[in-house]
Amino acid sequence: SAPLRAFPNPAYHTVEVTIPAGVTQVLITDTNGRLLEQWDDLVAGRRRWKVRGYAVGVYFLHYVQDGQQKTERLVIGRR
Image (cartoon, rainbow, N blue to C red):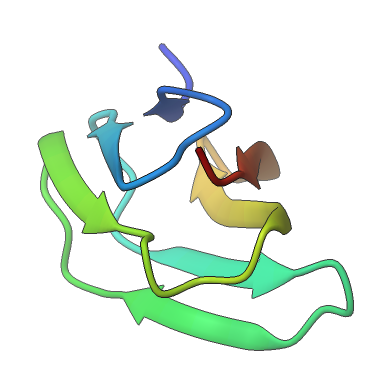
């Protein structure tokens, strides 16, 4: 299966997240493991995430696919 993808990376204003089939939940955390967002009841496709209000830094999108925990790393920057 194709993995979850977040782009552009680094992101500045908005991120397009491509959610593959079989992924029904995404947890977004910072580098301290603090849960910032939780997306539930997802279906395959694209989701737009506005990141302008987030601090510059590294974030992680955690999800389960094919029974395995996976993580996509995302950097938020400023221009």
